[in-house]
Length: 460
Image 1 (tube, rainbow, N blue to C red):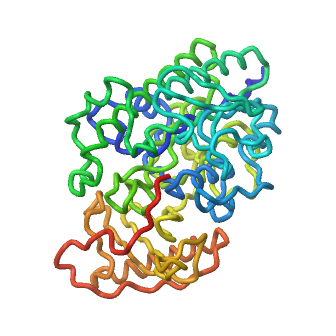
Image 2 (image 1 turned 90 degrees about the vertical axis):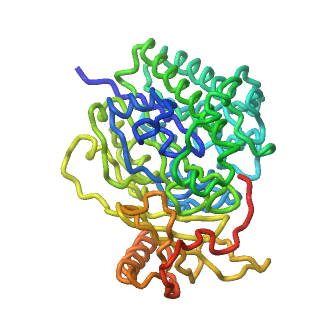
Image 3 (image 1 turned 180 degrees about the horizontal axis):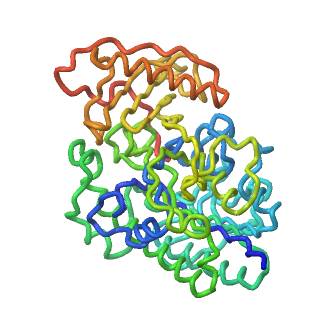
């Protein structure tokens, strides 16, 4: 008897740090459902975004391409209309595809997204920029025909309830389903610049200890950490409810669930907002999979990029991975099959700077553009011809990236090696090879300041 094709659900959070989870060492008890999923399925320990800002990261996850190739290198740019998304590939394989929540791939639209910009999804209940059309207890989304729906309850619950209703309806069909459930939490509420947890949750974390980088650098974390934790707690409860719904429908054992996030949150410690930097607080995210192909996959220590996840989902569903996808499936890693895997992670950075970064298991190396734009501040562009070195961290000695070693004479050799590797990664994905200006030598007698250059302010 032929095994049924697996269903696929993506549970996508916004701006969630990796170290908010128990499997990454948090003692706050925020994520028991995620932790169980990671332990019983496959935990991607070293999971990173390839672009630490909302729209570009989403373009990478939908297409399996880097942001400079999707066309959406910043929040205001547009996804290339000819690109095929995950929905197109699953549609072609006979799946029913649905998107619920935050889209953020159709500027300048805020609420309803025109049909032609819905990425090929068959069912639709979303807002382009949910942070601007909703609040904690006021969720406004639009269906595929542009009709507005106001969903009751806390925003996480409102979207989860809608998704569960959709799964119940799809369970009456013989076709497998692909559901992409995209939350705004734990992203800040833009118009107030706060983190609105469900009523009663924030006070539970009023004295919760913060990660070492936030303890050392502060930023807005003394004010915002409790609400942020409360939002994550409710997200994890929603994950549990979704898993329970799949179990009650008899679909859990035949459903692949991917949990991941678009980027992290440094709480205004690395620039004047929350992400858009090379630091792990910005780029490292929680990621786990469960279901067919990922049961007992264990903890993967390889460096995995957001751009690898589309190929992974297609591969796990038995759908050929198209040649234009620039990532690689991690399914062979989960199945403990021999596979050659890269030993570094490449990141493109936009909006706060035009930057590029390379992360290995031990080192973090980044460069940024210092050329002036029309406003006299450093040029913000998809890519530039000249970058200057600005960060080097030894993650073995300094996992929280508190001491910038760039320009230290003792690190000249490793810096030169990382410079060459970064250039190689840039050209591999089609970027023109730029000039990288070496940082001037400095005496490493004290901690270098992280924020060395002026940064643009943005609130998305």
